[in-house]
Every structure is written in C-alpha cells, then in structure tokens.
Amino acid sequence: MRKKIIATTAATLLLVTVCGCGSQQDPDSTTDKTPDVSAQQAKPQQQEAEKTAQSFVDEFNANSSTPITDVEKFTPDDSNGPYYRTEYRTGAFSTADALHGRLGQSSVDVLVYGAVLGYGENDMIRVYVDGPHDEINGAFPIMAKILDPSLSDQDIQSQMAKEYPSNNLIYAETHKLIESAHVDGDHAFLDAKIS
Image (cartoon, rainbow, N blue to C red):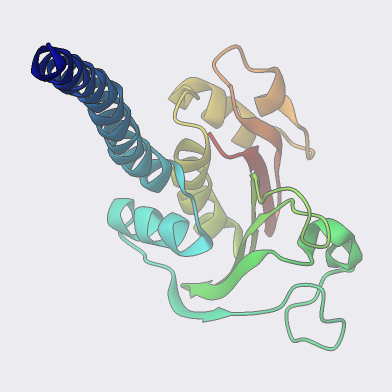
C-alpha cells in the first residue's frame, strides 16, 4: 500500500509539472514574438518620416536643373556666425539642423527646427532664398512642392504672381503643411510643418 501511495503521488506531481510547464511556455513564446514584429514594423516608418536639411537639399537637387551647391552646416543661433538672422535668436533654432548653400547666384538656408532648448522635437522646416528674382522664380515652385506635395501648381503660380509679399499659400484649398510663404523680389521664404 505504501508503494501505491508513493507511485500515485509521483504520478500526480509529474502530471502537474507537465501541465504547468506547457501553459507557461505558450504565453512566453507569444509575448516574445509580438514585440519583435512591432519593433520591426515601427523602425521603417520612423526612418521614412525623418526629414533633415540634407534630405531637403537632396530632393531639391533631384528635381531642379540648378542644384544647391557648396552646402555647409551652420549654427543658426550663433550671433557671430556668417549666416545669422535675427529670428534665429529664439529657442526654436537652438538645436536646429541647418545648412547654407548656393543656388546659382542665390544663397539658400534650410533649417529643420522647433525643439526649444532641446525640449520637444524639430517638427518644422524653413527655407530662405536670397538672390536674383529669376532664380527665385525657378526655385520657389520646386521648394513649395517638396515642403507640401498637396499644393497645386495653380496655387503656387498664383502666389508667385502677387505684386506684394503675401501668405496666400496658407489659404489655398490644396495646402496642408505650409505655415508661411512669400516671394518678394529678391527674397523668398517658406515655412512648413514636417508631415
């Protein structure tokens, strides 16, 4: 009888152990697989969404017969820097990704900005072009389309036809990302959210 009790107890313990181990493995294996799949799916989306000053220059150069050349990084909020503008003194430009370059006879500044003193994220892109009016007229439509692909060619041409600087693109029905834009003789300015 004693052997029967020991055998029954051993069989019961073995059965409980086998059943317990089986149920523990299923949730662990499911949990291990789920985060890996999510992490793999999230990484490509983040990489595609990242917009830098260099990616803007590259996209412009791929779409223009006159490329932006002599590109160099600069620190926008350095008041002694060669490309400083008064508006760069604000905290939104303190961690900006900024490039200066040449477009024919024009100068171009491209800034991805928005994080204030390291807080938040750089979620805006700004472009300045200073130079001959005909170069600006050639570059402005390409730049506007890069910053806001939803803009229609008609809305862009309408903006350029204005005699005085205006922000008509932000009122255009086709716009989604432009926050400010104007052409004023030998100066162009575009400011947009990063999609």
